[in-house]
Length: 152
Image (cartoon, rainbow, N blue to C red; front, top):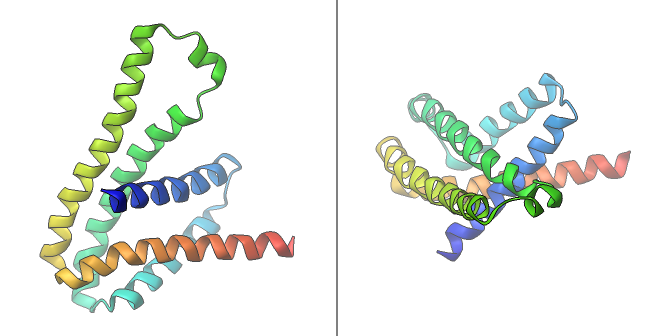
């Protein structure tokens, strides 16, 4: 459970970085560069064969799109101004807290669902490595972002 929480928090952090950049208007070139780098990074780390890659990427992209939407909902709540929360009724607060927790449950169910799909495409070992590779890539992006900040 701690690992699931850690993975969720890291995912949320990565998405929040991308969302924050999105608000500032990232160029399509930067997003395409990240996507290309991710494909290369994952393909190399997971040692995907061409057949595996062809089956894996459409499923992974679908998973990532759904997970991003769930995390966007979580971030909307987390970025809600204090004044808005102050003016909510007890019923509205209860509904929002339940929706917030439900989003994490939905994300966990999404992970379980796609874990099964990934295991149909990749070996179990590669699926396990996939989750580590996601975190490694996130760390890689953060390091690259920090390097870019130091240059500016």
